[in-house]
Length: 280
Ligand code: GUN
Image (cartoon, rainbow, N blue to C red; front, side, top):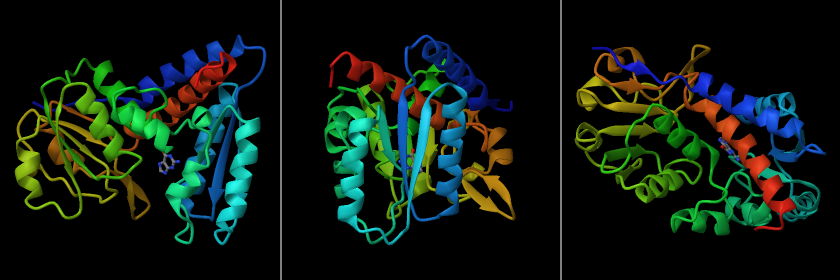
């Protein structure tokens, strides 16, 4: 039996369509500000996609570009200004090494924090009060729900402990009753962890990291990795060989990636509505 493909592109399109309809009924356009420091090619591409998709559904998306040697105080001052005039504000990561990511992110107004990365929103997610949560983890949970994949009671291995994907996803899946193994670069015997997992989520950006002998029959693979080899995009999982063993698998591209963009824009509309209603 060959695994069913989880079609993130299709699901993200239906989310965007719903958002477009809802936004068309508003009196004004929600505004999303994106801060981009430096010219890392992946970040330039991701922010351009966010702008393109946002604009298509009626969100006013503005990318604010800064050189990679921008001073932290100047960046924080700019964030504080943009907090006032935006409904949603994100700082594209990774930041240049000279900047302290946590300090920069802490300058974002939690009510505008549509990436869910400020200490307040991160903490709320941790305690199960999920309000503004990071887009990739929420996109992954949406994919599982959309395909009626039960989370409760499942053994789930997450590979990659980043603040954008692995850590918040671990809390969010634990909030839903799963048992989580959060793996990282130093994990011993990764195979042993992945082999006993019902669901594996990988977000490392190392193409080919997960091979078919690392997974059990019927596994569900959610591939949030993105790496390029010879100009072609690859996920962390060896798709063709694992597909034969998996019950479900996300492709790269067309799986998790488009969901991240759709959920970010959904968060922007959510923040817009919450701010209009005076909720934080
Ligand atoms: N870099 C890669 N993915 C993301 C994301 O979802 N949000 C931000 N801010 N930076 C990223």
